[in-house]
Figure 1: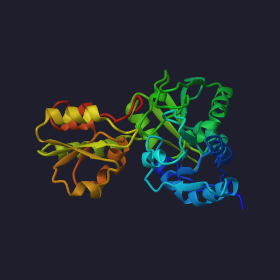
Figure 2: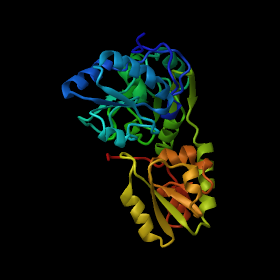
Figure 3: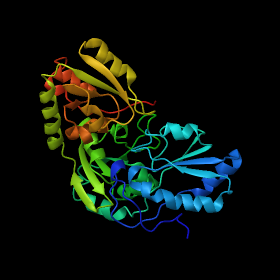
Length: 349
């Protein structure tokens, strides 16, 4: 039985999508087989995001049917939450390395990116979003952004809005982003457009929440085609949580400054600056930043210079306050409290 087109799929909650409807994915197996043939490869490495790891054996079975018997297929067991989260150990030890579920953040001949586009129909949710968007006769300007999984429907979304007299504003963010109109969980530069309302089409609340934080002058309408729900990004609860973490850290004496060694998440210069300016700050390096790993360090608070989502998504799980670099500057008195902002990544690796 072929698994190239699955009728059911795992959920992508860790990558910004919650899947509740059946759908098909295109694993682009022909492209993988072609690369194996061209490179005379003997080892093929497959990396899936967390919610799709259970699809790994099925995809491996399909590849085994198509590949020569002497080609070994390896599945990465490393955590994976984005295109910045590559299994570099596997990459170095395989002839072909395939990263599923995200669009390229860094072009490389070594890596085959298979974005796994969604085929959920976006028209119903676009219709529902009209209830929250301004009347185009009064305010026709609207920004349009989405995630990698829905990028294949982007032009369809734009055309649908334009047919209803909206003036759709889009742009490609910076070099960290692959497509025009694409947002990441750590980068919302694509929303830096001349419109005071932005339509985010995609699953999950994290992306539009970050977008609303980075662009507080814009009203962010969330159109979720997976869960069939339209809402408005509300930053109030998130801000209360972040202000609470900063206040708890204001009396901290010993600081653990975390540098993430994952290839696409390191901000070493920023980590080093903090340590150089604070005799009571200690540089801690690690790949996967988890509460258990930090519990054994006798610190009063931590600063995370790795993926912003470690702080914002997982912050409440850490036993001591976990701050972004900007929040750290507030906690130690270098910046005013009202300068609190969302931590984002810009640029490349």
